[in-house]
Length: 269
Image 1 (cartoon, rainbow, N blue to C red):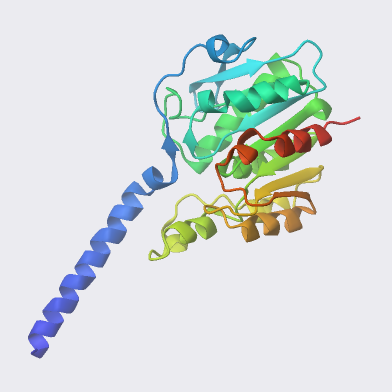
Image 2: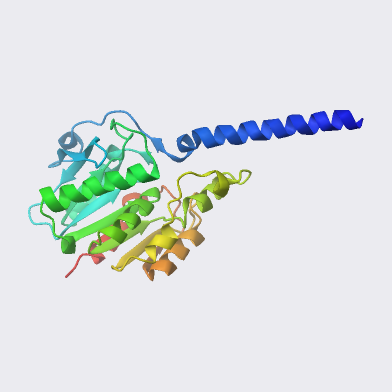
């Protein structure tokens, strides 16, 4: 192979790499956020006693959410979901929390569950603040009776919220240390840390949270390595509830008894 041919081959390879990285940069949020965009049914048709509520964000969006409240709740749980699905898929979790005597707000981010807008780190921060305002201002939930529950990506969302608006307690289910770290597990062949626009630095931010915190993780999580969840727990000096053999989306982690008991344990006495 002549020098000219080698140069051409290397140039072509470099061009392909640049094109691939350019596409990843442009469309990366489609790889991070995987919403179910279909409109959800009426809350009460899925979750008895629930109501459809509207959340108004600081940048002018109106988001749908579900709120359900037992007669005399011991606390209220703001639930921030992971990067997939929508609130309808979290109705079983809400039902079990209600059975445990807790009120629940199921939040859907922008772009999820028929909501307008496109998700991003900054956008999700606005969305969860709208949820917080709804609970504390419209429904008059005092901070000492408010809990945050984050699932996977939602752990980053509620952790950031807790640094600005501390609740009574925080439960993080399957948290990653930061988005780049978990992204590198999924896309090991890409320079994820260099490419990412959204950071979600959970481990860094949770160290500034000064309320009781619990980390629930699955011992066989194939999406978020258990070591990352343990690192988050260490940074938060958090209680750890590890469910042996549980993968990321197994029922035990979605709405199992260990998870519900961990939430109840955070309720102030």
